[in-house]
Image 1 (cartoon, one colour):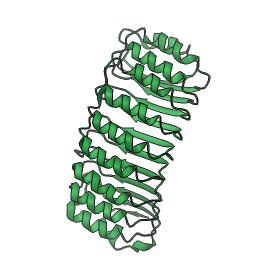
Image 2 (cartoon, one colour; image 1 turned 180 degrees about the horizontal axis):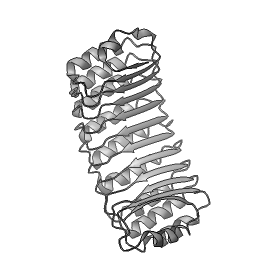
Image 3 (cartoon, helix red, strand yellow; image 1 turned 45 degrees about the vertical axis):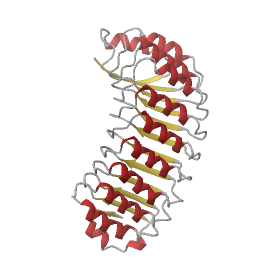
Image 4 (cartoon, rainbow, N blue to C red; image 1 turned 90 degrees about the vertical axis):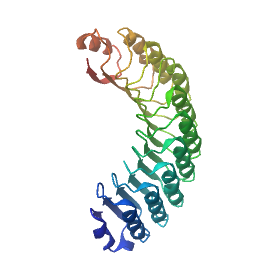
Length: 323
């Protein structure tokens, strides 16, 4: 059942719903509206799938608390998708939201969009503490775009996530956060402890990752025993030739990795990097699909010369390229 106004949702037969979509973005709901939403949600005791879109409603920390208290009554909840983009929930809001969600013990699939909420590293620590109590989660998607997060926050989040040993699918976006080399390293090394993880999507664009980091990352990826698909975005950083080749060497030794999507756009790669990259990767017995995104790299080489080199990597099926 889909609702596009709070009033319409409130008037429905709340206890009868099993699958719900609330599309309430940009409705200037504020904290009072969030309280009214809480009162309605807590009556949805039979819902198992919930898609709540509340972006740009300025609900702040108190509104996030109301939302959490409503959701804690939804004990049958298995699938939760929650979009709180640009709501200024802050450090306390992240904590209060999960004070409620952690009671949903049946939860298996969780998607959180928390872009531009001023959460910071402390808020991420609180958020991670809540996630760690959702022991049945199999799929987790967490978008933390532009939240003033540093390497310290990444460390705390990883320490929490690795307690969810049922995780199979994980998407984390740290785009426009200052996590740096230390944060990226602790993230990838720590997540290797998720022994059931098969699909990993990491967006680390514009996170202040510099040269010499990928030798560490390459070694870390060797530890992923069951990973079959990796989406790794490292665009708009300061990564150079040697580090990308070290990364390729590590990926080639990832035992079950079959599918890679690698975004290296807007880095400091020079013309000769691709030969070494291909040499490291093409000998892998497992990798079958490789998608490379190379926007605004390879200055001085035209597209046809680049494609000629890439054809030697038999596993390549797609190339996204722009001078």
